[in-house]
Amino acid sequence: MSIVQSPHTPTLYKRDLEYIPRIAAVHDLCGYGKCSLGIAIPVLSAAGVDVCPVPTGLFSSHTAFPGWYMHDTTNILTDYLAAWKGIEVEIDAVYSGFLGAPEQVDIIRDIYATYPNALRVVDPVMADHGQVYPTYTPELCNAMAELACEADILTPNLTEAAIILGREWTGTNISDDQAKDLIDALISKGAKNVVLKGIQREGENQIRNFVGGVECDAFEVHNEFIPYMLHGTGDLYCSCLLAGIMAGKSLFEAAWFAGNLTRDAIEVSTKQPHFQERGVSFELLLGKVAALLKA
Image (spheres, one colour):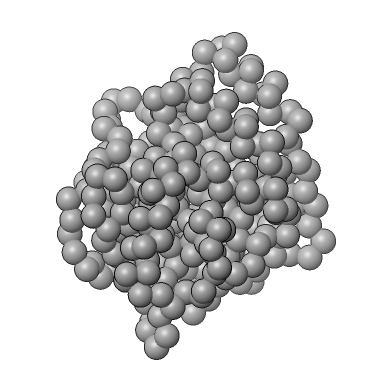
């Protein structure tokens, strides 16, 4: 990974290596295809984190496959989480991704209220390359946009950033100043730290991510672009970012690690059968995640 600058950035979680932190992972679960909880659980577990799933939907496969089935879990989540309160579950971070219904935003806010000191990480999974995902209604997009503004760490791609801000998506070929403007606008709406993903400029073979926050100036990290669009890379990036944060790394170090590992996983994926349908393969790289605790 090339690094434009090595800024001073905040450490958002101070890790005691004798303590195993606990994360509520509010994501969907897919039976086949690499994404969501199927990525978050192993990646964060490798970083020495106890992952407590809160399934927002059950899918037969990810939605790039034809004929997928979805079961919306909204109706069970209130009782599910009430049972956690009954046994006094403690949570150090709340990590949300794909949501199944607008009402799930209120459920996440209830989790925030129950665990007011938990780090709030929002990956606003709802769109990419100018297209909203097929299960997302305008009401759900609006609810996700509201949730995004409450995040301690927000990780949108360019399409999701445009939706949150009510702007038109203008493609991935944007300048440094345009990227920083998006970050500043997201921070002004309430997000404390923003990782803006997926800037790709014409004629370049790089993917650029820009990071900024209320306590740090915007900076950029970038990786070699490998010309395959794989399902689950956004989930992998955010899970690796949070793995770095929960290992006690700075925001800069975590962003550097997440981009590097995601790039390596795409390369590993290209060696697997039917990789473009199955999605990103990261399993052979989990040792690098575990090594975060030793570095």
